[in-house]
Image (tube, rainbow, N blue to C red; front, side, top):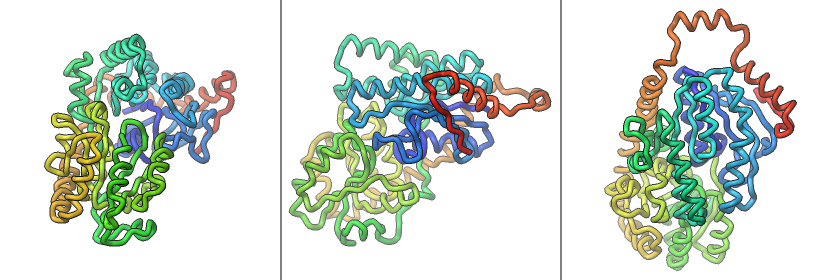
Length: 451
């Protein structure tokens, strides 16, 4: 099957949407599908284009069996609401030529990843042009989240954004999301029940597992073997509500047996570091490479998952999967009835969102009770093995893909006829076409091809 994935974020980004999109594309390629991706150069969560990439250049490369067309975008150094919209719009516009050349390839399925929803019209247009099936996968409900986080304040603009979102979503053949509550939200926005699909994020429990020794990072950070580590790892942005962690660290600064470790990058990291500058019980790390992820997650005695209460059902934190797989205790902030509450309840401690005192109480209780910490860790690990294993998730996804695209797939005779008639590989056609467009269009000043 020929599958085109169109999304802003992709590997080598280490967290969030880019990580999961890349793992999905690679798994589909390993299963024998011909997978292509149109994406941006890596920039998240540092909000800085990665080394070896250029924000203004088209680039074609192959990564782990997946052909990538990277399109330009503008990356603001200090993202705000308006700057984020321009950032997303820059990619949606600049990526259209790379998307358009795949009409020659005639994909069976065009899948677009949200965020960003601004990519969805282009994906839908390509699917209609080629007769492909269309699939929208939602990692975040970004319009709703923008309202709740105060990034979208104009009521009229908000109504227009929501109407645009509903109009788009109803036109895709499949709309998937990563939790049951988020799937329900898609239905409430008008998507037919037959068209929704639950596609949870996954975790490789063979790669993330409990160590039988202290993490090497304890020594590197100067943390004693018997000191309790409270770890936050992930993006440092507005929706995480990390102020509450700084408040808890300040309140527990006199306890020499507890250390807070903040690992990650993002828009609020600098502010968080300033707040913790005088606290002896805090450490900061940048995101660790994939090969050190298990060491990082095993650094924790307690994982903390702060979440603003007003976005609890708009996003399902992807970092929870690794926390569970590491068999360490989890403290999550969520209201009863939300997806996050249901996922953690019975496998960790769930407390009131944005409450520093509730967090302090939960940390002190778990530090004092290693038996309870171990029990929570075991339950989380079991959940990850039974419900979040990649094999189970991808098997369901492939079943839906074949069901969706079945009428588009050629039979064996047609395949042989196409192979005999073809003198040029589709990849070559797309590469040459994009190169010609780049030579003629001022918006595409250069193109770089990496093998």
